Image (cartoon, rainbow, N blue to C red; front, side, top):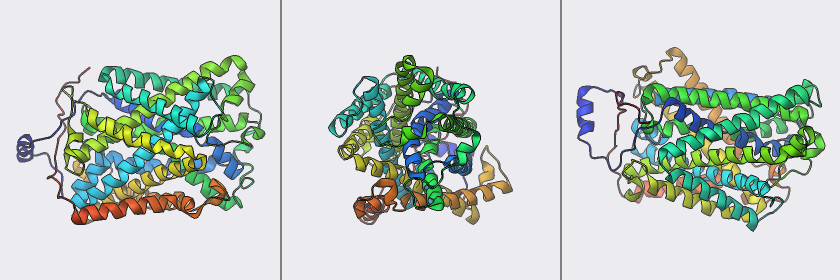
Length: 492
């Protein structure tokens, strides 16, 4: 199926009755900051640095760098698709338009469930930092679930305010990210290093993983969490000015900038750590602040925690927007209740936002069991890599069969497009299997079998229910095609 923007297509689109149309008010900077906040160097790195070191023993920096390089290939495919089909829902809508309604239904089920799991994990870890900031750190179970719910409430309110306020607060979060992660990392790297650069490659295999190969694969799986979320730029394409040009740029810039910061931060923290600091790390602990306090003094603790908390809130708020646009897009196509496709007079899908937050908040109940948090994290990461595999797979298949002509988009890669698409697909499949692989040493030696196999079990259940819906559910509405209004002026 070739995507064109001819006069006939525009006429048919103009005549289409659209249940809800989003307000186009985001600039390149706004799209970039939302993508940056969603990938989030603070939330991405600080959430995994402890478990990385515990499982691998150290030496996980090369795995982090390799994961970033391969994710840039996936981002290239997303940018290529965004330059031709810039519409709310991103990868869900691409799967539907290129692969058909059935492919879109499966894509939507995987996409929504995994992004909600990712939002739940961010709310839980963000709640941990919120609790630490207000002096309630060290709690477990019920207290951390409550703090996670408070975190989610704040993120919800930020999504319900006027878009100008939301854009300002997300920009503030990005500044906090830069100051709280990159700025601190610069000082640590140049003035407070305890080790030479060889420390970045040392100790691999001395953690809970049984050997260097197992440790490297585990490090690669855990690193996957740090480089997801760049696709948020594509799900908000319908709200972005000049999306065919701006969204691909935002995808590249957000992942590239965040990836660079994450790599440098991980190096600076590793070289500044006393290895004993991470010995007793858990999902509910903070391994980073002690390093800051040890090097800068006790005065730095409160401002550092405030900066990290703001960064986490920006990340969580962006994730709410990101996921709610997928829900909105599915509802507009008839794959979810129509009420979720309704928008306010200002063009904001508040019903989809509230639905997204409700499901993610219910997911916080898994936090009553500390070990279950790791399972939710694994599924959120694994589900998104399954989505990456499906998106790059649909792109590769339709590219090879001639149903999609990438040369019609704004981003033209020529022969490189096929090579990049193939490599991105193979990487996404490999990383999904790697993340889903049962590893008792990464969870708990006494973990039940269902927890070890959580990713394939949960994903299999979702696919099974989706299959029943496809076979016996009501048919969806025809595709709603909303072409970008390239000439529409920016709404400040």
